[in-house]
Image (cartoon, rainbow, N blue to C red; front, side, top):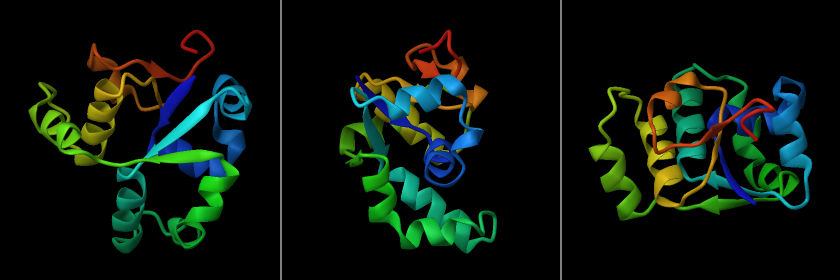
Length: 134
């Protein structure tokens, strides 16, 4: 099974796995799970690190390749289809990073692993966090 992970899930899985829900921890540890990390994740982390909103992101950015390897994750590039859908989503949520993750989840037919309840208002996005979701 292939899944897309939200930025906070990448951070927690890389540095604070106890913050993950038990179901997500098991899912990410399962060898049958293919983890996709959007190109929007390092972009978001870099911007928030530069602005001082995520000071702990610096070491993760410095060790990006090692973090990706540790999660056995693959990069999901942003395509023009993702970009068009992200802009056109009928969704009042304005965060461009979340809009891109939602668009990629829809376009690639991937469940999005996230604790962010904002995604729940999008009927075409399958959001997983709790045992009942997975």
